[in-house]
Length: 196
Length: 196
DNA sequence: ATCAATACAGAACGATCGTTCCTTAATATA
DNA sequence: TATATTAAGGAACGATCGTTCTGTATTGAT
Image (tube, rainbow over all chains, first blue to last red; front, side, top):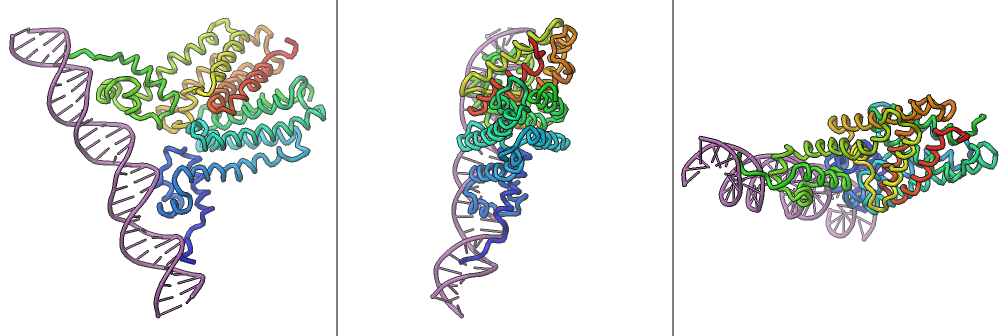
């Protein structure tokens, strides 16, 4: 009953995500969101409650779409070093996307407002998704003898998770993105056997 | 001539640095700075010009004090793998400093407002200081045969610079700081010879 | 056709931001 | 001692922030 809404909330959520991703939480204003989504202020509040609540919804949306898609390969039961390599390649490609690289929304938000409980929870979830996926893949690799000698799968997973975070952060700065190639290359070699 | 100022500008700069470091640019207000430095608004403007200008001065101050002290060992002419190890140990200690870990002011600022020219310039300077210092040390190590076979010094320097950035970023989140140990440990092993 | 319910559109709100003005106090110099 | 100069202290400014209110339009149900 009542007048039907003229906009698609999911579409608005996606546009809001792009904005927060590119500009960060503080530099994204309600006016920006209104302009980019085409949804009026009041309607945004009716749908999401507040700027903070919208931001949290955006973080969840990011986890469910961008992160899930990126980690899909790693969470396969039989994932191995091949999936790890493909995953790192994807990260490298994102970092190489030029001057407009936005990095990772979760990593950015962790630095910018990680002291807020609701954000910290999403950051924790992101990190555990990342570490767990890598851990599964490296565990399989370990059993198959594809892993660097002396490297525990969990240790390698924590290491590579850190590498990914670094790649995301570095990709946001013009001078930093030059480092991503070496970072990912050496990291991958560090987990693969010497004779492979 | 004229009334002498009651405060020490350098002391104020240092207090301002602590505040920006802990809270970031956007969440640090002029009122916060007045409260923490004990210097009145007008005097802050007289000394530094604006919030932005103060922030840039703070970044320079950070580079000249915190970063310079941290990199001092690496920039010694005869620096080698020992200095690299000590440097990474210091980074790890900073990351382990508990829940109140602030990470690195430059890395934080790069993520939060790296799109501003004045900030990007400091970020670039930071990254080149880091890479150059590591490059010198790894170059010496290479000549002494202390470096992992097949690893170019410059490539290793870029790799380790990325590791440092990751450690700084991860140290700001409670769940991330758990990863720093593995990150630094595996990274150090990745640049040292297998039989060492 | 009428009514209840919902959304739209935009004005307007209080709070807070960075910044500046104004008065008073304190010093160096003449 | 008188004066010029600079800083302190605090009120006040315009702008912009996130948020809410008001009136109108548009639908489903009775």
